[in-house]
Amino acid sequence: MTTDELRQQCHDMIDRIEDERFLNVLLDLMNSLERNFGDPIIGYEANGEAVRASVAKAQFAEDLSKPEEFMTIEDFEREMENEAAA
Image (cartoon, rainbow, N blue to C red; front, side, top):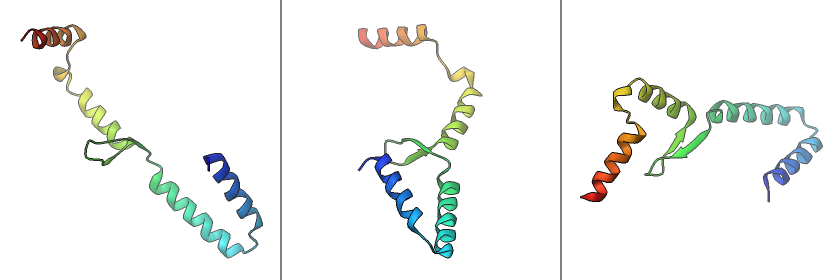
């Protein structure tokens, strides 16, 4: 089932619910999920651990604060040529 089909099925079921208490519980659940999953997974580490956007952003900012650790494309190409020659 596609995401759109799942979404439509959920909408259809919610539209049929008459119990206001149940709808409040459902709303609380959805709000909780949004708070907990509002930081999307953008990738995975080699060990399978999820990488969240906030963590990647912080790491990126930290990396940018250390320009001495960057290399130019030319330096990278020279390094690759040296490794290929070895």
